[in-house]
Image 1 (tube, rainbow, N blue to C red):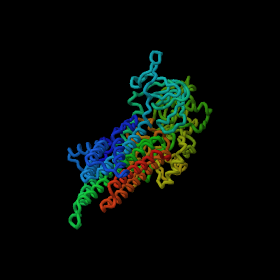
Image 2 (image 1 turned 120 degrees about the vertical axis):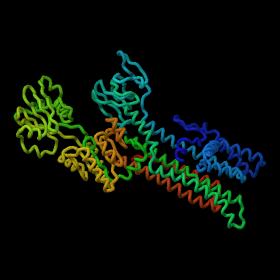
Image 3 (image 1 turned 90 degrees about the horizontal axis):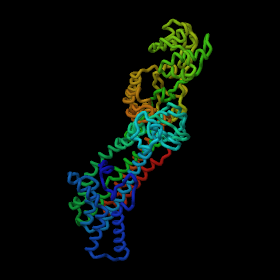
Image 4 (image 1 turned 90 degrees about the vertical axis):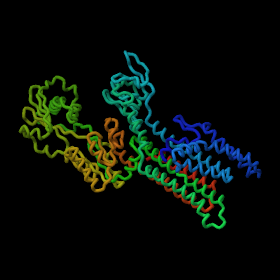
Length: 638
């Protein structure tokens, strides 16, 4: 039922295109309405009733103009032995109205039903277009440098490792690396944040970013169809086809509900003949027609998916990508948010905080350690090299570098043996060091030259600016917060204290994280796990909702997570929950509104109090109110 309503049905007089709507495209319906009002004016305004043949002919033409699509769909479904649908329902009701001589009412029912469908389809298509337009900002042309000349081509014609030129104000068309100097970009299309993001030479640039200040040259690293923006766009478009539990419930409900109302309408028409003394078939048949019209479930099966489209669109504008409307519902039920530390609550960028030298100057300790760490890819080693500056390492003779797993590095620098690593490395080589180092919370790189302690360097990861706000807001919502990390327990506890996290566990391998999350699930908790996607894949799979930070940094993140927060802000976790709750609240408002009005008018119709005019106005009115309510989601400022 829902799929027909949302996709396959041509029940609107004219198709809505991506380019927009034209009133002229709906001329058959508009002409039919004009004919209807003209006939009503003649009949009731001037006390003049045309001769029967002419009256019937005009109404019949108006009926076909306004309802040919409905009749066509009813016929197509009848051929598939599908009689319990809104098209067949409306066709039976309106043809029945003609059969008993209620021509104007028959035309009114089909015309106003088509108007309702027009507005419904318009709203749904507008929601889809807004979601697509939000992300489909890929340029249609790009300037590529070939043989020292600039050539303008379509982005699909650019290969990997080619260099493209992006002028100020232009959108980047392809993913790549900045090969020119520093440049600033607006990343709103990708992250939902419009503040400038300054990139240095060698840093990643993504399609959809807007160059703000200077001509930039970018070396392409991904083909057009493989860009992050293309993948994000595909993900959001696919999200509209993944239904929530509420949508699935309404679809199943409609399939049961429609045959029941057909049976009740038949009962309204025939059963009274068994106990009403002056039974008049025409009167009870008319009441059955009213019953059929008001029972149409279109307000439910259209406004509810529209509400979820609105939720997905609103989240996208906030830099949050839901892979399906079902995850909007999941986020409303979450009562525990489990978070990784590095890259989620902290920036994941290690910085040198303090240098303590013993027997060497601070500069000598730094450069010697950096020379050794320059042969490592570990984030801690890279932080020391970056802090020192690569230019200061020229002239160092580096040899025999050996990585000792879980301990650190050993090598020869300018003819001297140098050890750099944790305290376990010092113990392994029987090197004495100040015992106070063991009490330091943050990560420490201990250095020994020629088997003698020479100092240590303290490294720390910076807590994200909005992480405290995120934890406060989660606590205010009554949601328990848990942090899991592979970092040492002392560091994890320190970060947890600073942020106000309820429970924190360190020294965890991936299987340890799984055990902690499984223990929470065994307690009946509904869990959202927030991490960097790849390393935490087992936990993401186990959680009710897997949320990935750093959607721009990893293809695997986009592919495996249920929800992607593109700008890495922990506060967006709360935004995702609030979007889910707003969406569900409005969807259930629509369900309650539609069912309440229908039950009341169904009772009035069966009792002979409501006529066909009132039935169609109630039906279309409820549908339009539900649509307007659903559209509110897209306008929300959460």
